[in-house]
Image (cartoon, rainbow, N blue to C red; front, top):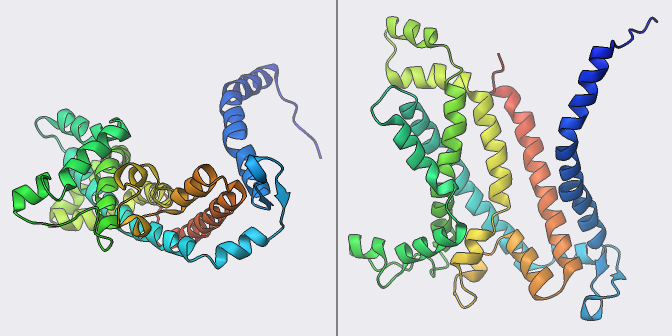
Length: 296
């Protein structure tokens, strides 16, 4: 079999290509790949006295995790957060993207306003939302005349936190959807209008199918991010909050076990379980996307 030799130009382009992606590859290896294997390795050990002299315990940590009701509760809390945050944020962002993709006055200003939550410091976000949710002098209770404990009621606290997540990510999702919408040819809409299709039918039968790859990308990345929720829970829910057990996520447990209780091996085990759950969910989405994602 005859092989084609690379020209000097092709070799030069390949060399510069590797040079340009080398920093990113190095960052991924150092900051992502290596820590994954270190975490898996750590999950087979028990932290020694004073944080030193880790002891190999095999699968003992995993046996303990599967029988730990706190871990199962955290998994359910995480799932409830994701179930609320992911679909609602995607639907709202898609509707806003369709609206802001049209030629309207002040379009750029509206886009900027919607994206602002993505660049606000998490601490500032937590402080503002704790005031909004405050049961005594909070904005919501004072405006609507209610007396709801939004973040201290174990039954609704996780959903209140999910609302913050929705608010924070809508702008990011919207920008991605706008980018996808700008790739849709206007000819499809003009032809549909001539056939008598209204705006809703055009949205369902033209917009959604043609930007389904973008929707799929946003769905996968949002599920992964939602399953890793931590910062908003950590900053909103205090240690003496009666809703703490009903809002702890798996990453929150990892932080508590690893850094507050110095059980790094057990904390690593919780993260490995979370990694496995995310991988299963991602595989399911990759299989399911064949039925509704249209690549053209």
